[in-house]
Each structure stands twice: as structure tokens, then as C-alpha cells.
Figure (tube, helix red, strand yellow):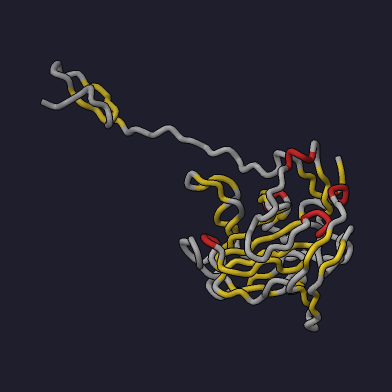
Length: 252
């Protein structure tokens, strides 16, 4: 088992559109061997700051050769539920396709909060997610907030846990107002309910342990088709039971 920092390497990286609440901007190339809290969260692992794509990393977790430990909260970071609504759809397969997060109930215009402290990496309309915000946190996790009616933050904004980042809605591929919430590491989604107890507004662990199986959705459940039966009568007057889709019995 290795720590997340064991993945780090020195590299030269271009930074664009970073700014704090006072408007201070950073736009330069520099060599960075470790992460800079509040400015470049976990660049030592990601080596990438992409404001346009959800998963630009193409990381192969098989290359870990074991497991990886990740602290859930850094010493000066907080946590808060993005919304207080109940879960209406879980992580896993839905309608025959993987569902990469959980859906949380809300009303149009309800405020949506950052779950942890971090920096906004992406804020844009993104395919089926509609209005979408992605935040990279200081422990290396990223959280996604989809189907927003309005985005209040921009890439490079520093945010604290509980800070409003947008308003709830039903944009993109959505059947009604809700928040689609994802937790990701190195671009790969994992079940938020392994980390967060949404009923008690609390974290379930202090340290996440990832391996090659951590990002696989539950296997889909296939059900055999149910056939309703009915009673018919043979030429001899004896009742017989047939499946409705059976062609063995035809009324003359």
C-alpha cells in the first residue's frame, strides 16, 4: 500500500486562470514537485489542469500494483452536504447503463454547496450533465455537480465547504429537478455512499483506500420476464394452465 504522494514526480506545468478572492492571478510556467494548498491542489499527482474535459487524465489504476491511501480531509479543510435532499437514484447501473453518481432531490433554484474546500476546475455546459461544476479538492478528490440551472463559480475560484457554487435545476439529460453528484479520483468515479452518509450529513471514514476494484459499478441485475398464467379448457373439459405468451393452446 502506498500513499498518494508516492505517485508524484517533478514536472514543468503551465498555470492559467487561477485567482483568489482578492483577484490575484497566476499565469506562468513553473516546476512543481509538491502540491500548493489553495492554488494548485494535487498537481503533483494529476500533472494536468483541464477546464474543458471531465476526465482528461487517462490514468490506468492497474499500474498501481496494489492499493492507494488517501486522507479524506486535510487539516484545514471542511465538509458539508451539497444539498440536504434525499437520494432518489444511487450509483450503479440504471436503465441498462452505468450511473456514475447519486441523484439528490431538490427544487429549481435551491442552492448547491461545495462538499469540500478546493478549487473550481471546470464550470460549463457539459453534454448530458447540463450546467456542470467540477471542483478539485486538496486531498486529490474531485466532486461533480450536474443539472444546475445556474453556475455561480468559474474555473480557478477558491471555494470552501458549504460555499454556494450554483442553483439546482434540470438542465441536460434530466427528467426533473435534482442534483447529480459524483465523487472522482484521477478522473474515475466511485460510489459517493462509500464516503458520505447522506442521511446524517457525515463522513464514513478518515482515509480512503483505492484499488483496481474501487471504480467498478455494481454488476447489473437482470430479471427473467414474468408471465401471467390463465386457465383454459381442453376438448375434454379439463382445466389447463397456460402462459399468456405460449402458443400451445389456441381456442377453436
